[in-house]
Image 1 (cartoon, rainbow, N blue to C red):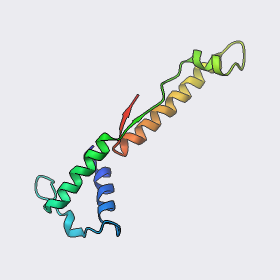
Image 2: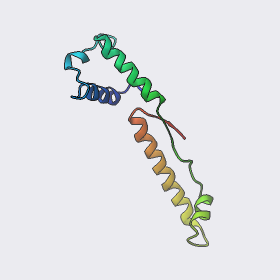
Image 3: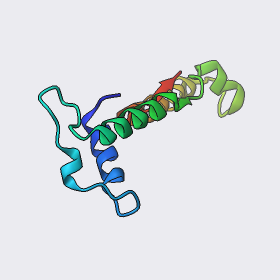
Image 4: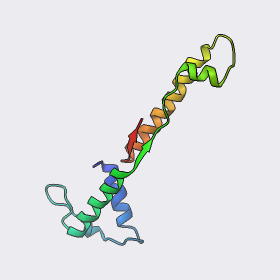
Length: 106
């Protein structure tokens, strides 16, 4: 979960007017930890909260699932393409969620 995007989101939130940390609070040591102890603690809590957040994606579909749900024609050739489109969309959603630092199942 230790991504540049997650760090940027944390620092934007913690540095916001609502939370109020100053830029000095975000200075880091050689190991990449925040020098300011409370800021390091906030960061660890932020990571833990994100680690507990899990999104369950819907199951992938098969061409047979599509044929049963949407009977367009007797051949059913569209069903394979439709299943690929649905599965591609599910996969893309998962990639975006993972990029935000959230765990994805499915």
